Every structure is written in C-alpha cells, then in structure tokens.
Length: 87
Image (cartoon, rainbow, N blue to C red):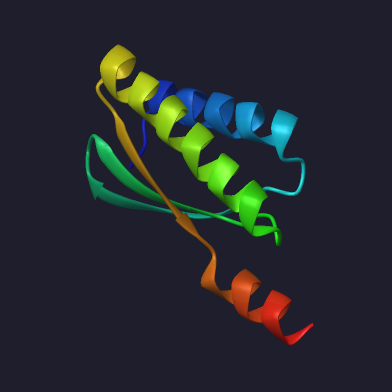
C-alpha cells in the first residue's frame, strides 16, 4: 500500500504532467513492492506529444527515485489507445 509521502510524490508528478499535457489522467496504480509501482495513465493521441510525455515522465520519475527512493513505472492505458484507433 502506498504511503502518504509516496502518494504525495505521485500526485505532484501527475500535476506536473498535466500542466503540459492536460489530457493526461490517472487510470490505475499497481504496487510491485513497497517502493515500486506501475502507474497507468491516459496519453495524448498525437505521437509527438506521446514522446514528449514519455520524456517528461522519465525525468520526473527519475527525480522521485533519487529524491525519495520510490520507483514509478509509467504505462499508457491500452484501452485509450484502442479507442483512439477506432475513433
């Protein structure tokens, strides 16, 4: 279970992502161990914006790892991509 500080760090990362990518939404969190989490997010439809989002996720995730010892792995929400391809 994610502790208060880990939750706060993740909320700050998501807020930072949403400043540049307002369409990003948290879909789910899965705990791998007490200091490592899979975080599933929606992502932009545009491929260039997806790449920019992934770069920013990497930077913010690395900061969280170095500063707080928590490792967030970001994954795109598969159902969002499928919906975008159909629509």
